[in-house]
Image (cartoon, rainbow, N blue to C red):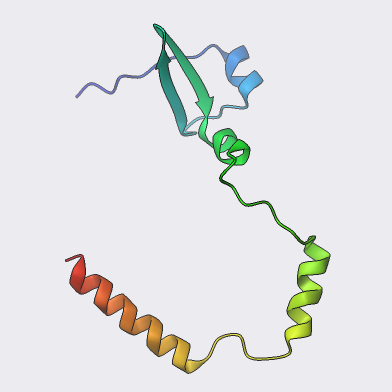
Length: 90
């Protein structure tokens, strides 16, 4: 079975931070191939929601809630939804 592998020079891999097994995005534009590490695309994506609170502010907000965040009822509802999804996606 043919795998369609491409060998990139070590200097290029190091410059882009590409490591063995790292998923890459390849795009063909105007007869050229553009290669970009997938993690860079996710981090740079305008669709990624940036945090509005710092880690410290987030922890403080969680501590201020003073309550049970997940109940047995939530477990039951989640299990019911899993069964429904399993049935629909058999």
